[in-house]
Amino acid sequence: MNYETVRKMAAEGDASAQCYLGHMYEEGEGIEPDIQMALSWFYCAAKQGNAPAQWKLGKMYEDGVGVAADPGAAFNWYQLAAEQGFSDAYVSIGRAFQTGRGVVEDFDEAAKWYEKAVDAGDSRAAYFLLILGDEQGNAQAQASLGFMAQAGRGLTQDYAEAASWFQKSAEQGVADAQFMLGAFFRDGTGVEQDYSKAAFWFESAAEQGYARAQRNLGLLYRDGLGLTKDPIEAQKWFNLSAASGEELAKTNRDELAAKMAPAELDEAQRLASAWVKK
Image (cartoon, rainbow, N blue to C red; front, side):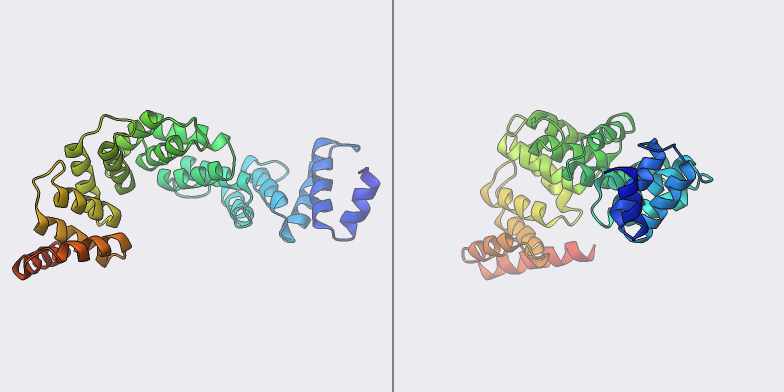
């Protein structure tokens, strides 16, 4: 559309036209560049809830283009755009948390926003996650990279690479990563199968209250895989997992209970109660 058409639509209150007119003034598309006019039209569109304009206004506040730089105001505009699912805003919010511009620095939050951007199809976010996970050693980013490599989201699917990222994250205490690493060792996915290591990582996550890990640790105790077979200990973990709402654990608990003596069931419940209280 030409300038006159866009200008007329914008003047009539069309938010998309207002945003596009801002772009035309910013880039000098068919008219002389005018940053102040660009800012004005982006603001009009943003106030009407136009997500691209909200993000663009955030960028102008972040970079000090046409206005005094204000990282806090930039972050607020990014949030408004993100609430509407605008993926560029996810990356910008991730960068804000990573650099501490406009918000308190928080690498874990940065990783969450970058992963959200990857899920929305933004390839740049994978690069920023790699920086967080590799260069800065952030455990949440490492876990995110593990899930991405496992599923082929934003990274080439590579189970060995996924296992490597999960290992780095698990060693820093991230329960999600500990559980996934346990599952990888149990199944031989990306690593050599090792039930003892599977038990170790399931227990690490289970001790943090991770219900799926509690159930899987119970299965290893029930079947004597990587651990000495112990139905009482298995039932303890099934009880704990079931209490957290893990449906499969309820089935495992009831099936095992049918094979146990009353005294054994009482002991398993006592151990579970003691774990909760500790």
